[in-house]
Image (tube, rainbow, N blue to C red):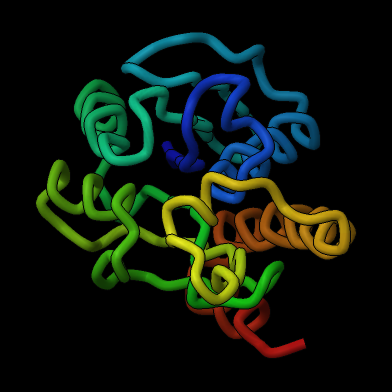
Length: 187
């Protein structure tokens, strides 16, 4: 079994924010795959897809800073190794819509990733970093990621959500290294 985690915050207030881009990518995959309806389990919304093997889509409902709790509970129940997890999340260090796949590493200051690292006790899970750009001069980073994409970004972000779903499918079919070679290129 593979587990794909999309990071975000629960509730209508956060639905369209930069911080919820992981939820949007999982929604794209669920629609594309016609996966099961979302159910609440393990302090998360989960949906299953079965094709070449079972894949569980997980949207933690614990708020970003505690995302690791939902991931830990899901991994514990299914007895899945951390190497079978793919996490998609927003990243301030990449321009809006740019993707980067990493096989391991630190949090880069992302509190959702920090929580997962702390709860799993390892960095050996794949990340799909989704660029949301840097905040404008004088903006607080937290306020920026909890803000909505501006109108000029919508087309780029929508295309990147599709591309991120494509990248996750490539990771599942080919592995992380070939997907990195394909999707980490500058376009």
